[in-house]
Length: 272
Image (cartoon, rainbow, N blue to C red; front, top):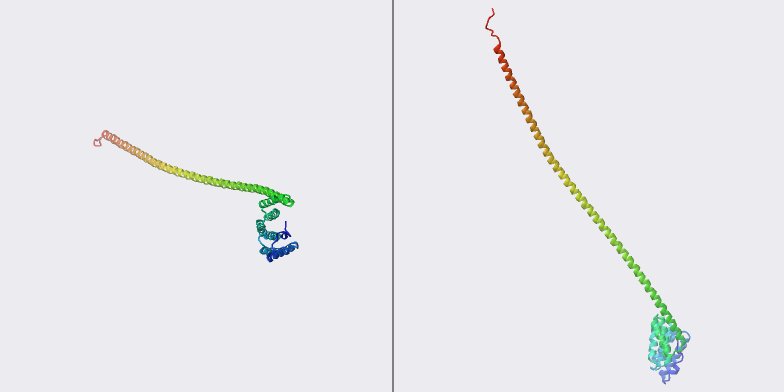
């Protein structure tokens, strides 16, 4: 981190009580800064900024930024450096301000802005070795960060692909289970339909058999009745024949008896 300890001696050329007071506060701030009392240095530099003229505020703002940086108050330090940058046209001071802005961006992990700041610092002071080293470190970290991001992207893509594959596998399994359930349901329905058809067929066959048996029973009854009537007719015919033969026999017996009576001698003739 670059700082300006006594630059105010070159810049504070104005006369008057305010300029003298600002110069005094800058001195006090520099002393506190060198002793590591950065919070007290901040107070002194802020008082110097409030009392200095516009031209003189460049040094005060720059040193204030240094004090804030040492307290790790990155955002406030950046604002102080940017205000200092806006008030100077000095190439060396611009180089120092851009250098410190690069350091702030590095602390904020803003590598892209840090690299821009270091490059601007080298534009105003190409021979600044410290800035070159910081720029090289920033570029190296950026490359490492890009590689890590690339690896992370690959890992994320792999995780997403694995997750998608797992999801697809789960969907396929669900589809297969649903298909199996449908097949089982269809099979059950088919079996139920077959059983119903079989039962209906059995009922129909049983009904037909019963009807056929009923028809056969009726036919058998008719046949039995016809056979009975036929037998009864035969019996009656035989009885009539027997009666006829009996009457014929009786008639014959009567004829024979009459003949015998005619040929018998008369009891009235005497043989004496």
